[in-house]
Image (cartoon, rainbow, N blue to C red; front, side, top):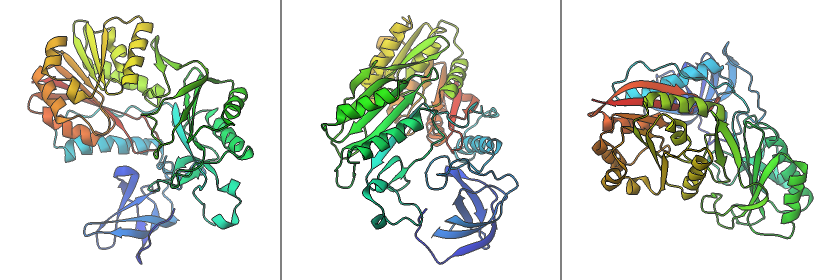
Length: 468
C-alpha cells in the first residue's frame, strides 16, 4: 500500500483493541489515540503515522515486532492490497465480539438509546466463499505491486480484472484467487481475462473512457446455477465469439447477459442488460419459496445468513395471521413473502421498478396472493393517503439502505401507529439515529445482530420496537 509519509514513527506500540471501520486502536506515548488497520489486539508494532490531529493519529504498520498470540496468517495472497476482508488476521470469535461491541456502541454509548440486553450475534456458517454476487472490473492500467514498473511491462501484463483499490477510482487490483465467492467465480474471471488478452479485446481505461471490456458480474445460487453479465463500453465484432466462448467453457452459466455501457461510470442501474443465452433469471430457494434473481435484482449476498436474518425479522414481527404488514424497502419482496404465511396482508414498497416486477413474479410463482407491491421513492409513495387506502399496518418492517430512512417516512410511520416495528439495518449508526425518532412512542424490546460478512467490519442488526 502507498501512503503519504510524515516524519513520525511510533515504535513498540501495543495494539489494545479492535476499533471502528475495521481498524485497531492503540495509544501514542503522549496518550493520543492511534488508529491502524490490519492489526490484532496484543500485537507489538512499529507504526508510521500518516495523519496527526489534536486528539488522534492514523497510521500503518511498518513492522510487527511481536505478533499477538491470537494473530492468524491471512489466507488470501491479496490481503493488505485488496480493500476487502481486512480482518483475516483476527480469529472469528474476536470478529464477532467486535461487531457485537459496534452495535452496542452505536445504539447505547453514542446513540443513548434505552435497549434491553443485546442478544449474542448470530455467526455465519461460512466464513469463506459465502457471497452469491461479485463484480470484477477490467482495466488496462492495473494496480502495480511493489517492485513493478509500468514501463518495463508489456501491455498485456498491465491489464487487470478484479476489484477497485480503495481510494483510487481508476486503479484495479488484478486477482489470482478471491475467497469470497464459490467456483466457478474465479475460473470465469480468469478465463474472461485470458480470452480478452489473447484475442486483442482492449481493456477499459476509465480516465480516457477508452477500450471495450469493462467488467463482469457473477451471480451464483446454492443450487449451483450461475449468471454472468459482461459489460462492454461499446459493441464490437468479436462480442458474440467472446460470449460464446464463456457459454461453452462454463455450462454452469445458465443465464448469460451483456450490457453496452458507454457512459463514464460503471453503474448498471440505468442500463439495459441484454439476454444472450439461457434463461432470464436464476433462482434461490428458502423454506420452499422460490425467488427469481435477475441481472439487476437485489438479494442478500450471503444466502445462508439471509435465511437467519429473515427468520429473526419474522420472529420479531410476532404475527398471528390477522395483521397487515408493511414491508418498506422490500427489494424483490423476499421478506414480504417470507412473512406472508403468518400475515393477513403484506404491502411491499421499493424504489427500483425492476425489483418490484420480480417481487410480483415471485409471489405469483410461489402461490402467494396476500402480497401487494408498489414501486417508487419511499417518501413519495408512503403518505397518509396511501395508509388510508391500503389500511393501517399492525406491523412495519424496515430494511433501508445504509443511509437509513427519510424523516418524512418516519413521520408517516408514527402517524400510522403500528403496534410493532421491526428495523433491519446494515448500518447501526444510521439505525440508531432513526430509532431515536421513534423513541418517544416506541420501546426497543429486542436487539439481534447478525454477521453477514465475515472478515469485514460490517454487521447487520435487527431491532424490535413495541408501541408504548
